[in-house]
Amino acid sequence: MFALIRTYEGLSVENRDEATRKANEGLRTILKQSPGFVSYELLKHDGSDGKVASISIFDSRAEAQASNEVAQKWVRENLPFMAMPQETAGELVAH
Image 1 (cartoon, rainbow, N blue to C red):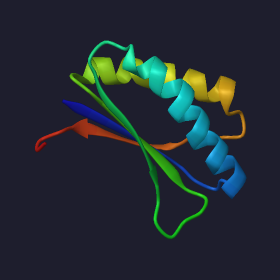
Image 2 (cartoon, rainbow, N blue to C red; image 1 turned 60 degrees about the vertical axis):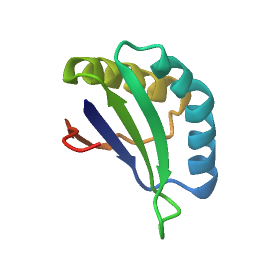
Image 3 (cartoon, rainbow, N blue to C red; image 1 turned 120 degrees about the horizontal axis):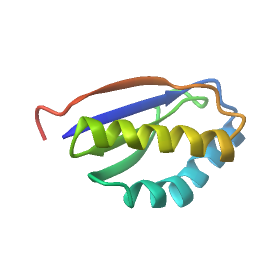
């Protein structure tokens, strides 16, 4: 399995709440239909009102990378106030 973690920083509380609501309602539904989908989670960082991360898990690197393009396009179209995220990706070695 392969994981992608996208961390978005510098969000106002209102923008963070809107982004998490829309991603949970919209992006999650789209990603669930993607080949190799395992899970999609959202994380509100402790101690930081302006930071949120998404964690996407797929069966393979190729499927995860394809989903990343879908997610980036969705964010640009639905959450234009979001800056480019810091991305981390890698194979899950324990789960």
